[in-house]
Image 1 (cartoon, rainbow, N blue to C red):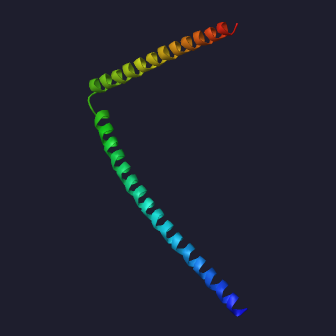
Image 2 (cartoon, one colour):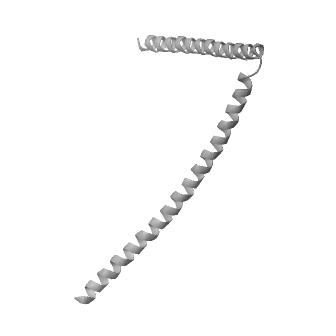
Image 3 (cartoon, rainbow, N blue to C red):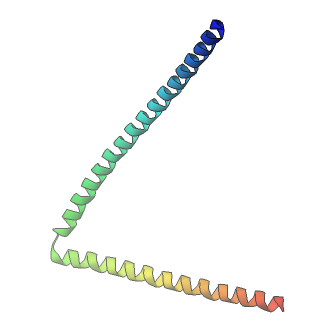
Length: 107
């Protein structure tokens, strides 16, 4: 009977040790991932600082240059919105025609 208890105790301890080893592996993986994320955050911070400084350079340029840049932004936005509307309209028309053809084929 004492042998059974000893055997169960040894098995329990082995199981706990195995779980501990698995946990150690997981902790190492999480620590590595945390370090990767921290490094990535630092990289993004540096990029943000660079973008901020570039934006500052643009905004302190002369007024005519800023007007030209704004006009370019306006033109790009306007062209993009118009193209999107045209594509959406074409897709709508094609879908409508497709549905009408399906309905005609059904009858």
